[in-house]
Length: 114
Image 1 (cartoon, helix red, strand yellow):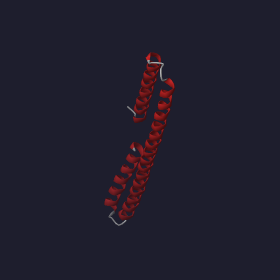
Image 2 (tube, rainbow, N blue to C red; image 1 turned 90 degrees about the horizontal axis):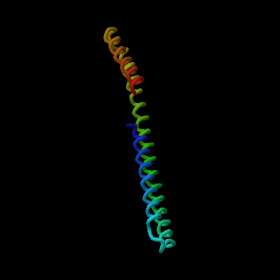
Image 3 (cartoon, rainbow, N blue to C red; image 1 turned 45 degrees about the vertical axis):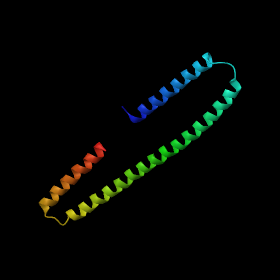
């Protein structure tokens, strides 16, 4: 299953579970001391939202690092293919044709599959 879909389902399930628990606590719980509980709940939500912001920042930084690494890898791979192309010119015709065919098959595979 797709990672994003799995994550969305987990978050949705946690939100629904929290809503059900909150409803049951409000419905079945005691009415005494509600204002003090509301103050405590507000502080808890403030802390949780701050932690969520920090986790989101770490996730975004990690994501952008991974994208940057993939981009750098693609540039290195392209440079190596250019080096192979230049080195191929010094080979005999039959060997150069074999290297050219292999390189072309590799490039086509990368384009189609990656």
